[in-house]
Length: 367
Ligand code: SF4
Ligand code: FES
Image (cartoon, rainbow, N blue to C red; front, top):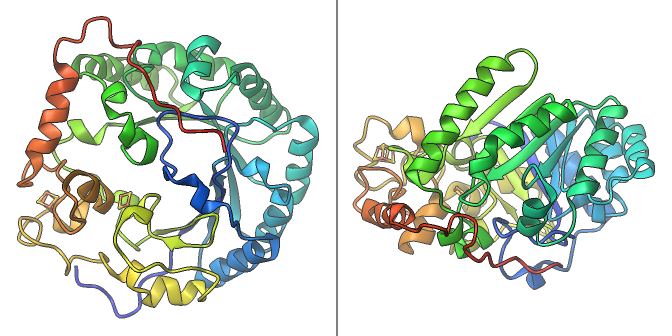
C-alpha cells in the first residue's frame, strides 16, 4: 500500500482535554512528564479544533484525558461537537460525574459514556487507582444508566486483576452495562514503567480467555464483550490505531496533534493546532506522514505478505523496545528484535509464587 496523494479523512478524534486526574493508575498511558502539559488549550481553541475536525470528515469525538470532567467547559465543547453532528463519547474515571454534571452533559447532547473500572471490588480497585474511588464509580455508572445513556465499562487487565475477570464481568452485568471492554495493558507511559508488575503469566491469560469465551456465549445479545489480547503474547502485532495517520488523530492538552496516544515519545517534528489547521496537520505534516502507508518500512515488513494487514505494528512500541521507531514491532515473531519481548514474557512466567498481587506498583502522580 503506497501512500495516497491525499489521505482518506480520519474517522475519529481523540481529544485529550487535560492530563490532570484524580486517579493515579499504575497502567496509565499518559506521559511521565505531565508538568509539560499544563498550558492547556482553552475553550475557544477546543471548539475550533472540533469544528475543523468535522470539516475534515471526523464522525466521532472521544473526550478523554487524564480526567476530562476536570475541564469546567466540557459541556460547552460537547455542545459544539453535538451541534456539528459529531457522535460524542466521554471516556472518564467517573469521579466528578454527579447527577448535576451528568444532567448538564446530557442536555449538551453527549451521546455515550465509557466508565473505567480497575477491579470488581473496592480494596483492589482503589489500590490500582491509587485513590479511594470504587464506590463513586459504581454510583456514577448507575447515574449513566438512569439518564438513558448506553453504558460501556472499560477495564484495563493486567497481572494484578486478570484473575478476577469472572467477578469483573459479574459486576458489569449487575450494573446493566451494554458493553465491556477488557483490554490488556499497552506498555506506554506509566505502564511501561510498571511492566514487570503488570505483565500477566501465560497461565493467567489462558484462564481469562476461557472465562471470557464462556461469558460471551452466555451474555450474547445482552452485553457486548470486547476482549483485547496482550500484544506480548501475540504472534503478530495489531495495526496500531488502524494504521499511522489512517483512521484516528489525537490532540493532547497543549495542542500537539499525533496519530496515536504515545507519539510524544518519538523523535518527530511536532504538529500543533495552535500553529496550523487540522487539515494541514492531517494531510501534510511530517508527524502524520512519517509512517503512513508502507513505503517507510524496512525488512522484514517491506517484503512480508502481512504488511498491508498489520502495517508493521506499533511505532511507539518499536521505539520503546529498541530506541528506533522505524524498526519492525518486536512483538512480531519475525522481528529481529523479538527476543526483547520473549525475555519479558519469560520473566513473567518464571516462578514468582506469591507475587501476582503483591508486586509494587509505581502510581503516576495526581496532577
Ligand atoms: Fe507484520 Fe512486519 Fe511482522 Fe510481517 S514482518 S507480520 S508486516 S510486523
Ligand atoms: Fe503510537 Fe502505537 S501507540 S503507533
